[in-house]
Image (cartoon, rainbow, N blue to C red; front, top):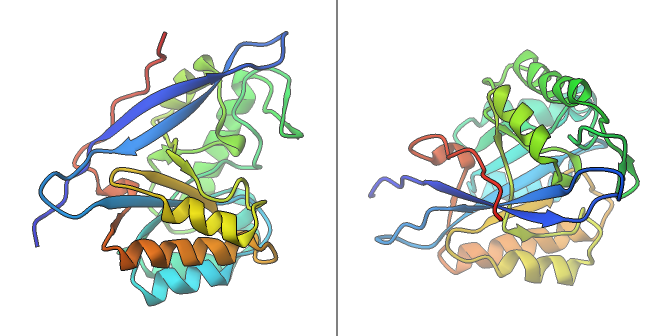
Amino acid sequence: MKSLFISFAVALSISTSAASGPRLVEPVLHTGKDRGGPAHVALTFDACMGRVDMRILDVLLRERIPATIFVTARWLQYNPQATAILLAHPDLFEIENHGAMHVPAVDYPTSIYGITAAGSPQAVAREVEGGGAAIVAAGAPQPRWFRGATAKYTAASITEISRLGYRIAGYSINGDDGSLLGAGAAERRVASARDGDVVIAHINQPGHAAGAGVVRGILALKKRGVRFVRLADGAAPPPAPVLSD
């Protein structure tokens, strides 16, 4: 089988933040397209806190589907058995950094979707470094990618995260709206992925209907012949994101 090398292109969409603070940016990430092979899609899952959705993890294991899992230090602490499963399958699962306490990596005082942001550059650094340290302490390799809670940042916090050695993990398809979608809507979102898409969904809400839809969407993509890839499958680190005009 021909080797697949992926390059990552990053664009930043800009959203309006509180009037007293800088603009927030939300990175959009696509993989480079493999012109000579099947369509490929990167599945990424956030494990914010709570437990693990075994509906999703079981299908990834059974179908041998690789994925990138963004974990917080809080999630690792309360899910040692699920963590052991991820660590036992390094060929399938790439473990990346979702922060220490699941606070938005925004460097001024604000609230995003009701979650209080880190609030200062120092607090952003603590959130990033704390998450990375917990992953290494759990026995995984040093993470290279960071996705903050809410996936929103300021330009300055992106610069700080890059200084700490991370790339920002954006996405191109929001598969479950924070695990708040119904099963049918989540299935349609995930199944709509096309060549080069990066899908975000959640793997920490076993009690939500969205997880069942995410599973059905993944299986629909597999039936269509999609090849699943991890963010680590790129030939080289992606370029640092640059703000558009």
